[in-house]
Amino acid sequence: MTDASFQQPDRRRPEPLWFQVEEAIRAIIKSGEWSTGDQIPAEDRLCALFGVSRITLRHALRNLEEHGLLRREHGRGTFVRSTTLVAGTRELTSFTQEMRNIGVSVGSRILDCSLTKADAATAAALQIEEGDPVVRIRRLRLGNDEPIGIQTAQLSGARVPGFLDSGLLQGSLYEALERLYGIVPLEAQESYRVGTVPEADAELLDLAVGTPAFIVERITTDERGPFEYTVSTMRGDRYEIRSTLRAGRVPSNPRS
Image (cartoon, rainbow, N blue to C red):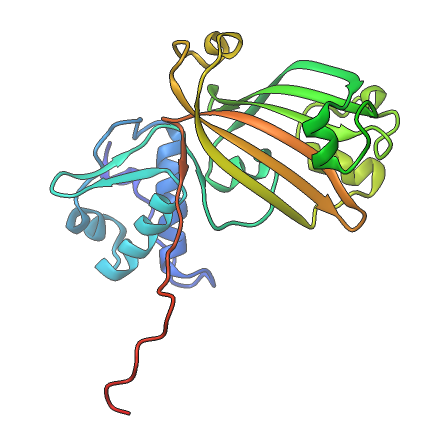
């Protein structure tokens, strides 16, 4: 990579310098000039190339690390990481939007789409009767053409009549539901546990049977109640959970 590849921020623009640096680094990663596993230049070198202070640069790098594009290893440096979806404190969004937010090209392949009957777990999640109709959508989720996970979403059939014939199964599910039925997610409850990749999913995820994976369950509600119950098997090497922990009490003021 030549020094010309680094676009210095324009101080006349209204965006903060750290934001412009962050976007410039995103562009470098997206272009493939920095590939997965590559070590990026040291901070002092990047400061010189971008013409910014160390504080500004670190702000940009911290955001990119939190969004899963970079990985910092103490004593070694900072590296471009593989396609990773970082789950933690975030807005309620679809998988499609989450991947867009971290600068990853999103993809999806529909594995199954059918009208079926709610089993006990699905009925409890959607607050419907066991045996009621549900729309089942099973998809392989991709990031930069690499498998991230397999998601099986089930929608209350009464809430989405005719959805299977809508022609809107590709792309963002939430965008389609809002467009067709006015369903806007308000809240979601998610639970995470460590499981293993079943035989039916192993080849699709490019993993060996029994490989550890995250099993994620989500119940999403709108103003009328639950409308979606999704169970996902996510690759453990491409899906990361990050949380911010805070003290349960406020420290006393030593000057008081």
